[in-house]
Every structure is written in C-alpha cells, then in structure tokens.
Amino acid sequence: MAGLRISSGAHFAFVHRGTFGDNAQPKPSKYEIEETDYGFVATTVVDIVNPPAAFRVTGTIEPTTTRTMRNHWYLPFARRMDMSYPSGIRHIIINCATPIDDGRIQLVKLLYRNETEDQCPIQTLIDWDAAVVYEDRDILEATDPDAALDLAHRTEAHMTSDRPGLIMRRRLQELLKEHNDPEVTRNYAAA
Ligand SMILES: [Fe+2]
Image (tube, rainbow, N blue to C red):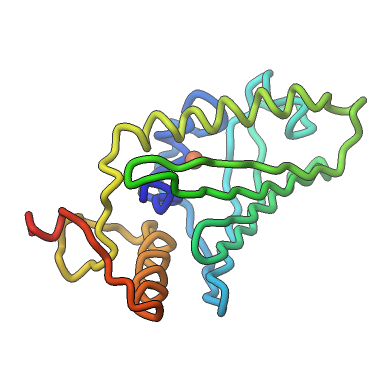
C-alpha cells in the first residue's frame, strides 16, 4: 500500500526538490494533527520555493512563498488537501488512491480553485500538478509497496514527522480488524 506514505522525513525538500521543495531547508515541518472518526486533520504552514513555472499557480513572482495546508484524510484511501497562499489563491485537491492489486494503485485527483482562467489557465495547473505527482510516483515506485501496518514487527524506523503515516497504519489495521480481514504481508516473515 504505497499510498500510505504521505509524509515521511523531509518529503518536500527531498521528493519535491524539482518543483516547490526547498532543498536548502530539509527540516520536516511540524503538523498539528487531530484524529477524527473518519481519519484525521493535519494542519501545517510550509515555506516553499516558487520557480517561474509556479508563479501563476501560487499567484506571486516572489522566489519563495508559504503554503498553509489543511489535510483531511478519510479512511481508507482518500485525502482532501486544502492549500492557501498569501496571494489569496486557494486550491483544494481531492486525492483518491484506489488499490488495483497488491502492487498498484490508481490515483485520481480533483482540483478546485478560486482563481479565474485569466489568472491561471487550467492547463498550467494540470501541468504543475502532474510534475508534482510524478515526483511522488518516482519515490513510490522505488519503494516496497508491501508496507507492514502492524508496527510491532519493527521492520522500519520512524521519525516524528512520520506521525500521520503511523496514525494511518493504526487506523487501517483497526478497520481490517473490524471487518475480520487480518493483514497479510510477507514483511512479517522477515521480522
Ligand atoms: Fe508528495
């Protein structure tokens, strides 16, 4: 379930260094996380770089800007990412990652925006988001999709910024238990 790894370490600075990530500032940003009955809400403000390809996306030509993010995660595989910029531009992206089989997901993105087509043509947003998603895909496809949900097996090491992903694993495990559908992973055998 590669889609679980929404946050780990310095995700933006490392994975998204070709788009908005600031490679010079790899320290993970702090998330405020509130668990809910449907999943969680994670809020953060991140400094991002603003290359020319992003000028119309962020609504500023400054070399850097900030993004205020309010992420809702809905069990099991949907996310609503609400992003706003100091320019007043706000984008809400709905991600649905549907498992196709044990090694593949189908990711569908819907984007809602508050700027006009004159301010930013839709194709510019599609191209920008595609570049961001392809950065994620490069990492996901280089990662073992068989991530163990049960952390008791200690097959990975985690840091504080992995907390959203750890909550997702625990909640998915609980959901599986509720449906009498125990997790199957070959990673336990190696633990
Ligand atoms: Fe990402």
